[in-house]
Length: 159
Image (cartoon, rainbow, N blue to C red; front, side):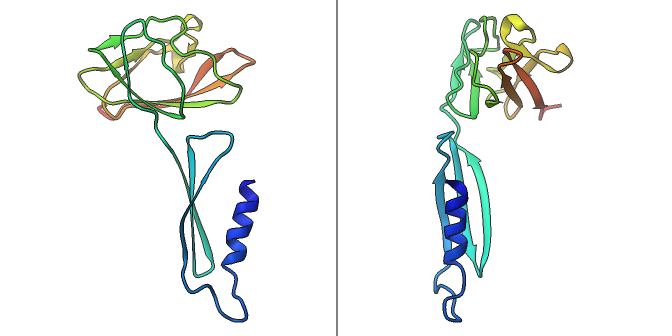
């Protein structure tokens, strides 16, 4: 479906009898049918296709120590109800094979710490727990063959 839309946009930008479309096509938005949180934006200007993809974040989840993170979107803003270390088992419920989740901290006071371990359904880099403060993020991938979320990347903006 995406490729059909790209083809149609490119086709519309071709010269017609020596003339191009009088107005450039701008900000055409397409929602990915497999992931409602993905939004594709296209611009066709002077025959060139420009594309970008973004992920709509879910509402910020405010968590207690026994909360489970809900993966309802790819980008998931988090805050604690104070500085919390999540102890729920699992911390994140199983996803689908290949699912990606980006956890993003929203507070340096109400931080959220996730813990490494199969008990928590999280396999973090070098077995290191991670505290999400304001702007910190961690990218996780769920693999059914392993049965856990696996860390792909983390960013600690404060240092």
